[in-house]
Image: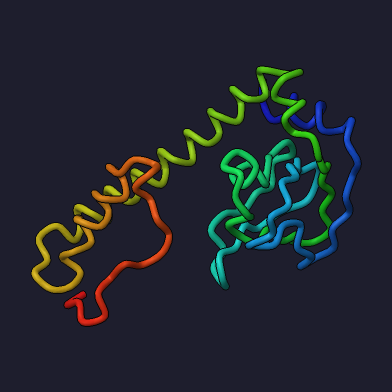
Length: 163
């Protein structure tokens, strides 16, 4: 299965028209819908930073919150006129079309490889620093080597910590 196949499956679900700047997903939203890009462009934003841009029809958004059972972790906004297909019962999609789950796993694995490669490069750049930035390799190693149970998005830093 590829993006074109995903788009073909998604066409069976309602289309959602988004105008420029309109949010398809809002960070913190507990809603667990899956969206598939039919046309246009989407930006994934964390705060004011654009962390990803999607232009390929068949691209999927909302998968992280859906798979983890967590609220949306980012805003997803339309750039220009954009059309999405909204899939409210994504669990059925996984059951009825097992290739969809494999496709999504491959997409997520590619994203993870990009991020871990980037983090590895950053870790190497700061490995020999003696100042506060020298802690970057330890932090990144902890994030990359930790199990899911160890990951916490909060801070347990001591208020008088040197970092």
